[in-house]
Figure 1 (cartoon, rainbow, N blue to C red):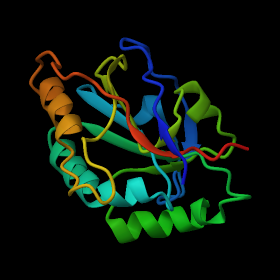
Figure 2: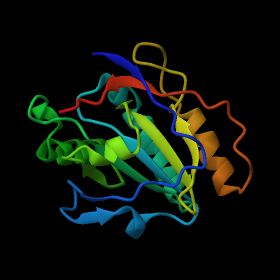
Figure 3: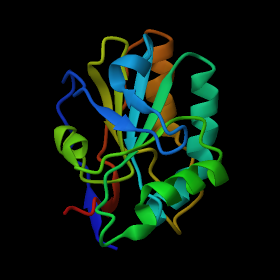
Amino acid sequence: MALVQSNMMELGTKAPSFTLPDTVSGKTISLSDIKSDIATVVVFICNHCPFVHHINDKLVEIANEFQAKGVQFIAISSNDVQYYPQDGPEIMKQVAVKEGYSFPYLYDETQDVAKAYQAECTPDFFVFDGDLYLAYRGRFDETRPGMGKATGNELASALTSLVNHTEIVLDQKPSMGCSIKWK
């Protein structure tokens, strides 16, 4: 596993649009169709990454909490499935069901969406305000596999600020995880 940091897209950047297949529902989903007027979280994850495994339970908990407040969560996997077949759409659906994802888990086969977002690692978080301008990017929290239980405190703090219409005051730090497996 190669440890990689996120690129930290510039705050205020407009969310790149996309239309991708949802591995759970079988529907094709566009960002514009499901974005929230409060906040939209786009997170790049994959099935096999130990950094994603580390946060999965807490990610589901935070997603459930903030979806109840009108925040939209969207997970995307962009890994090359030729060399990482465990990250393919069929297994993505199984993982989403097993983990209890309450949000779409989209498959970026061409990797164009990951490139548009400058995503580098899994997990890599991008939080957009109601107008789809980047308000937070980076890590879930300060923990890593084997270094404490995931809290999601940094993501939750940013989302709380957006829900409450207050300024995000976090010192935003890059996410770290496995590299996206490029073709």
